[in-house]
Image (cartoon, rainbow, N blue to C red; front, top):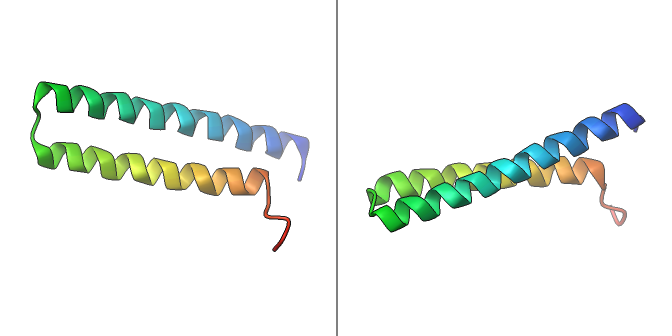
Length: 67
């Protein structure tokens, strides 16, 4: 893998980590404010999708050696 591609993946992973953290904070705030449970569930689903994308990117950065 080229250094530029590796750097690009690391940058993408950092952005996804930040997005995941932002969703976490937003969900916390929504729960404290007593927002609609459906809205909170939708946010949690989006947060999970970000986590899945992050895992995919991290797998590209560090491939599974045993495979």
